[in-house]
Length: 281
Image (cartoon, rainbow, N blue to C red; front, side, top):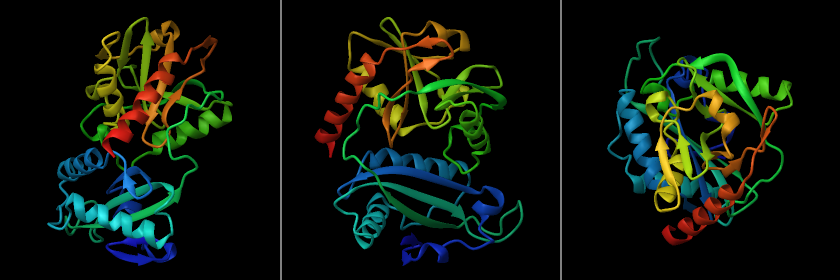
């Protein structure tokens, strides 16, 4: 079951062939982790969504309060018997049907889908995560590249490239040949006691988990955080690299080409992340 504009429907009845997200990529989405009916980092997701809708000149309905959208998600969890589970929630917003490149209206539809996950907490995945650079196409840095839109062809092709080359992920470059993100999350590199992550100006996604990890690192006096451009050369010199997103939390990178990495900081950060969640939810 899905929630389409407040109506609980079977999946096959939710999207028409004229959907503007389907036809023109005229859509945004938020991927949210919910645990036992509680939406993790919901305020951050909500405000990112509102800011993104404004940037794309979508009309924000008066009903789109934090409370309303939370209620719509929880109702869908209840109807799918998932209130006592940990779930991936996808909140999809598209401009209503009509028009070609120029839409007939800036009003929006919303669609919510849910899918169960295995663990209530963020767990450290110590399985192999071998990465390389994906250099076929590049991110053009702009405000649009920081948004979570459904224009993800580069990441789809990059994921196919990774699979064909027995890789678990790839790093994406921008047009200045700086490393900006992984295929499915933001990246952090560690060298001695300095932790670097690409700045939004380089074109990386304005990730919700990126924000949480930055806040945790800033509370750790033994480390300094830099939001600055990362060259591919720095990957070889790093002591540790990890990828962040709201579903897995922190994914340590085990290897890049012939380089092997540690994961001590990833373990510590993951513990602090789970503590932060218990204290705030």
